[in-house]
Length: 323
Ligand SMILES: [Zn+2]
Figure 1: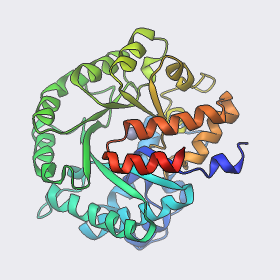
Figure 2: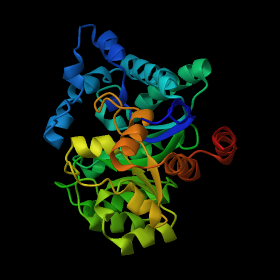
Figure 3: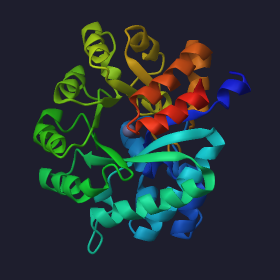
């Protein structure tokens, strides 16, 4: 077990899905009924990604109104105090909350309102990442990019592509990322989680500043070299990767392999509620299971400052806190 000093250090979470990281209390209050932890949390022996994804049904139900979105976002940020988070990039797919009368603009406004209210109470810095979804058609994703553009630099920091990686060839999304680039969006992409290393290479070629997971880069030193050269951050989510079977139990987590190759790796939660995790838990897991040292864990947190999408003033404050 890591000592409390490191478990309680000021921390950063760059890969955190809002819907999968709501608090249980928040879900109960928004839906107005009793929800059991097992309804929204995977068990120790989660068998598949499909089982994992089922746990998002109730959280998604919560964020179908602007009130639900605002409350979910507010409760989420306040709850991060427990993990001593100082800066978070929360991501979600605005078009999954979009319906008649509520466009992505209203969805984004509600989430930013909730986060800003929470920040005034708890002081945690935040930015939002808007996710395109791989199962949405090009028009739907493009519409989201357009409707959210006015928030870039005003709480929104980047876009992402999330959702089923294996079932939807990443190469089909090139036109959307070309559009995103024209609109000046920085972007991260879920790549190499359940898909192969070509997705990881493609993300680099398209100009991703970071990628989510990147597991498929394992045993590909030439790709790791490319990531090092281009300073591309890798948002790793250890517990989630074993739960979804992106990695089989018994396989060594590749974070040290990547770090040794000079890749800017970071430790993240993915889904705090669904995975029943926190940055402290992720750090302790890596330490207990794979002998990742305190120094390494601290370095990964410093990497997170380096590859964060926030402005330099916020980065400067984070450096001061963490050094
Ligand atoms: Zn993710």
